[in-house]
Length: 185
Image 1: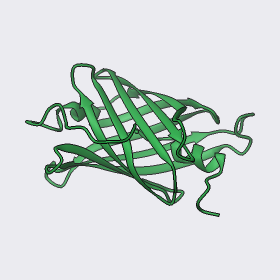
Image 2: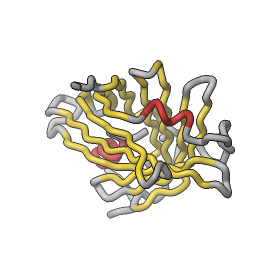
Image 3: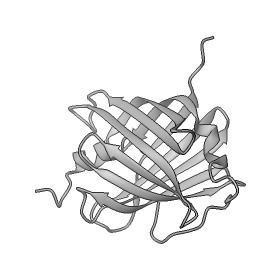
């Protein structure tokens, strides 16, 4: 039954995304909508923790197609543990684009389990925070999600993923801590 997502499917969906509420807001930095996102460009290593246990992850961000889009690639692993007896290997990719008509960044996340989430994002430059809220979810009827990225500095950020699998109240499914991967040159 595809209209209802199992807890495992929801958790797997959540393990790796950046996402927030309903309604739309304008970008706070219309002159350069990408300014708040530029810190993310590069490779990251993360520790994941949430309802289904702990694990490790890697993620990359890069501008593509003449800087018009920001591509995100993610993979995470949770070994078997009490919260997740079978463990999990999760993969996803996402594309951020700027919607000039709405003056906001849109984020489309493609998840290996068959979900596609579309978010609108608001960047709060002064707080170094990016909040993305679902507009639509393919293959996840009634689901809502919010991803919040809190940039600590240029080398670390925290990511909070909240989910309402049946459209109810959002609750934190996981919190990831990311650090920039060292570059060997």
